Image (cartoon, rainbow, N blue to C red; front, side, top):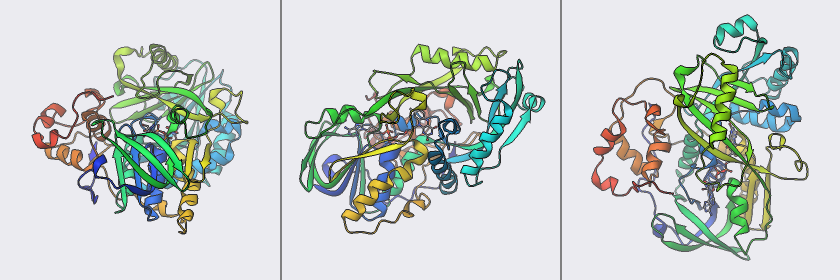
Length: 488
Ligand SMILES: Cc1cc2nc3c(=O)[nH]c(=O)nc-3n(C[C@H](O)[C@H](O)[C@H](O)COP(=O)(O)OP(=O)(O)OC[C@H]3O[C@@H](n4cnc5c(N)ncnc54)[C@H](O)[C@@H]3O)c2cc1C
């Protein structure tokens, strides 16, 4: 962890549901990365915007990704060249706009005798990948068996032929979502509320009525707006089907993906690896600070999509896949620091119907049941900025303003107090915690620990003083604003 610049935000006190206005130009519902991106774009265009989420900002799918800004090397197989081109360009843009939240790294793709693609074929794929980035990616390389063994000493030797190396980016998904929101909040006419749920939507011709509920205090409030955007990710079908006033039929393929954080000392890798499993899936193994991220699975599910965690089966599947590639390491449950799961918001369309989940396209879809209700589904994290532009353009133009697609190419203006990438032990003070609570929209202890500090459990803690020690010195007045019990 490392410290950012002190926040420059203009909103030192966080608004409450009873302090917001009765009317907005636009209300954006859902503060995952997609809603956050649209909120920032519209705020930068001078519209009076409100962003709400029934949980903490970025606390659902957008904190449960594989944490890569990437073109999607595996989509080469589907010939999704347009999507890869767009994603690679977005990845390279964010490396410039938010270098404190993402960095480029070499991804190693080992090839074995039984691999579906031999090294020569991989070389062609990696060349196309670099080409689609407009050669902005650091150029790919190939390694022979000896060089691969030298760089990854514990990798399975049996049948090893070599490895391909290509370049993608590692990011902190929740911090990027939060900072996109903080950036939108730099505009005087923009507001954002976490733990505020949209309960009921009613379209009254040119005006929309929104019944909101503060999920912590239970306070209800109805407000109006001219335009509404719903960026509900995988929760869209469930919410929209519950609304008698919105014509809707289910459109999502819910696909659950799970990850483990394991102890870094277990495997001697310095860079991310891409492993092909026996059943044709891809597992990413990504070292970061003092841990290694391992994921992901892909499973159809009927569980409740909020606040998910991996099943025993998924955990075992990930451990088995790792042990297959690192046979002498005996990686087991004792090496797991923490885990998490999320649902990919994949859209079922004419082209993807009947396809397996791993082949279903990651393109996004927009729907407009009323002229002033916009629903966005699908897509991937990497392309959030461009995904939302179609809706932003329509809305900006409906206010007789000129849409400028380059406004969102500006660097983010408010940094988080604690930043994600640093191996060194750092000092954190109780005053830093007080600042975070007051300036970074913290409403529960979990918001503070997991999303603002990156503390899923003590294995992830990188500061010299313990959290308990620091928190005990936070002033009682500031603590009294926080819900300390586990809040669901
Ligand atoms: C396992 C996995 C790995 C992935 N890895 C990558 C990756 O490495 N790179 C990449 O580019 N993409 C990746 N993706 C895809 C990416 O994470 C998602 O496309 C993206 O995070 C979706 O963001 P979202 O804003 O649409 O959804 P969410 O982040 O889920 O946001 C939707 C929000 O709506 C809120 N909400 C729901 N109902 C209401 C209501 N009634 N009122 C108010 N708020 C409500 C929810 O609380 C939630 O916060 C991955 C996805 C998964 C599942």
